Length: 393
Length: 150
Ligand code: FES
Ligand SMILES: [Fe+2]
Image (cartoon, rainbow over all chains, first blue to last red):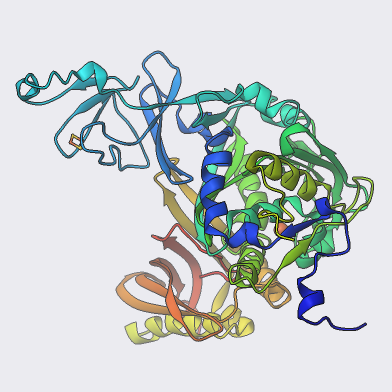
């Protein structure tokens, strides 16, 4: 097999345009800025789970693709979100990541906002009489908020389609697991990683990379996996059996602990474009979301979910199952993180020109269909083909 | 009863063994009823979390699999200061602080995680042994993480 010279190395791979991706999508600063406005500015993205805001006036703050956000449950029980910026001189209004308050009072000059975003207090207001500035014109910038299956989503665009239109049927395969019992988050962890955000998402969409994980090589039956693609770049997988007893001193999972609609040793996943993945490993659910920090840095947030009100021993078991893969010293998580950084090491510098996503297995096994679906939607929203984003010949 | 120095040493030797990934040496410092928990508090979900929990057999199996995994290149160094040693019969309860420094494949070092160890040392035999360890992390952002316990 011959190696390639400069010209043949730079040439596009000998596959259809939809079956490879240009390295520029990971590194170009112009593309990164466009992604923030054309993709992250328009899609519905997970903010948190309902169980993170159980009571009236609970709030969470998050960082979403460069925009700080407050999510809060109002006195009327409705969840609303706001850009976390004080209307006065622009300071970040809330610094805590969670809490409970009827009034958000800015630390700087004590302007106050209620849980519906209205500005309800300006100290020493008479000095604004001259200019006519009124508190009622100084509310927070509200961000569209809606929920499905206990998942609270936000959308920075006032014009985007509704959450239901955005998701379509993509979460249907997981709905029994998400709705059959009341769930709550027991695990939350965030990590910043030196890689483009898409490199993380690819670890969720690229089933072929199971070969990297010794755990999956030992325990996962890939041949029976079925992949379903949905409009909007969303995807789901199911049908892959798990032989947990084949790793270390682990045991098979007991059916009594299985979530509704799934066997304890079965696995079903769902991916929403551009940055959301649910993995249901029979007895436990993990959700991860990734947001961009810079072309070369991402933030991934991981949540583990169990059944609210379950016995201490069931919760203990579920946490153990969660941690086997995704806890500290979890067997899979650090490998995906290293994979993302290893791709950054070449795409970030421009040393890698393309990546190939050309596996075809009729949407079974290790077909690259989810990656192609992701990049088809990426190309549509960006108005640029992912294989050649600057239309260079 | 063992001296404070002997008790400090079991903690230091355990760190040296984990740093060097000498798993048998580490397990030889643990009692058969060893229990390990790594805990963290999440202000996001306002909950105490357990991110890793193992008994003796589980820890041994976890460590034995580490060489088969693709993990961050380089090494981890556990820098420990023993703050308190309290004694109750044949058990010593020890509070220590740790800083774990990661050194990457190019020799660049950075802080990976920091926190406290809360250890129970079994002093009933002919050498002090780690009977239980709770590693409580202050650090919640793990970067690329690790396959090794702290
Ligand atoms: S910046 Fe918030 S009150 Fe002044
Ligand atoms: Fe993976």
